[in-house]
Image (cartoon, each protein chain N blue to C red):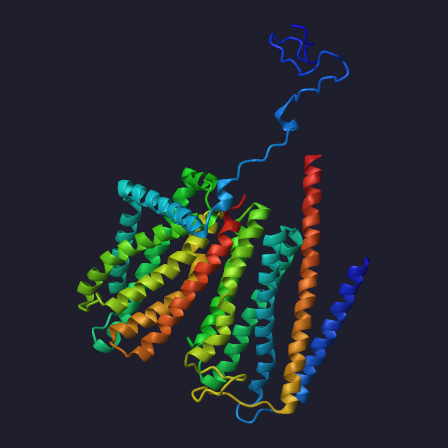
Length: 281
Length: 233
């Protein structure tokens, strides 16, 4: 072989002959040394061509994973729901002795509605506090944040989980209160109000709890932050529940339910917008 | 004295003069109201206090949003200063309202929607200050405070619209007259002038307090910086 070896690759045992290079009039073009010398188009990233349906599905899948994680952890340890449940029953007990709970029909609706919602609020506060404090203490909050998912999906999952736990406690407490006060609380309209109120409370509560756990006075910070902001939800729920239990007309119930729906929409929307700023580092 | 400090001194003097003038107008120029008597004059301080509190909390929300977008410390200083002033004026609003209510409604307090929401608003911003006090990291403190300021601000417009949504005994001045309201009275021109002047004065008072507080906070931060440098040297 009479080919000249291409420059800078003296040690190779195989030489590629340059075509028509028997003379020096056409010196060999230098071989590219590294891949970056030759610009190659990158393959299209799959994320860029994702449709909104796929994004929504990813979002729901991530949120669902967070809910599933919470449910699984709870199923094994049962610490959250049991604490909330026992506390609720104790609150009902204390109300029985602390307040003169009249049995007259006229005021029974108001009294029962009040006891109901105070119980739910206090139990919900415990649930929210523990749910997010556990995340922070075990470092799973950091783990969640490392996941390549939209932060709002984490919020949605956490809030849905808290809503489920509060709902579970409420489903148990409602028949208990029905028995204790001799007043049927299994009323579809009342259940709707309970759902809407709990939704609003869990939505704002999850948002504020994720801030409160970083504070120094961790356990009292959440009630201090949450109660003033959630009082409108509480007022609407109590008034609507009292009106329903007193079998009032839609004129009295309707505006409060509208107010509840309005609050739920507003608070969930705000939470979605600001949650990123809470958990960013 | 630097230029901005001199301007602030001028503002302080102007504010003091305006307050003296406003007090004079309220007690000497405004006529005595027929049905309520002299106690109605509290209205000239009560409503501007509410206005200043609302303005202060609005400034906090705007500054909070600006901080979240730009992460510049100045916005956080503005937000926290504004909340402090707002909390004071909101408390003044509630107390002057109670002083007025005692002779007119025969009670210091009622769980009327407007009063309740005013108290809730005050509590929300007290909680804001407590949240700030409980968090060490400055950036996290500013972020959380901004978020909570936004969440809390939702209740401020409710204070105004609640009087139109629910029956209440709070007098309505701007809006259709509520037949159940006790103490509503139309304003004569002299009263309107006094009221508007007081409103203007209180706004100037707010900005005076705000700029003074911002200056104090800046000096405070500078001292902290110098302390840190001294301790580490």
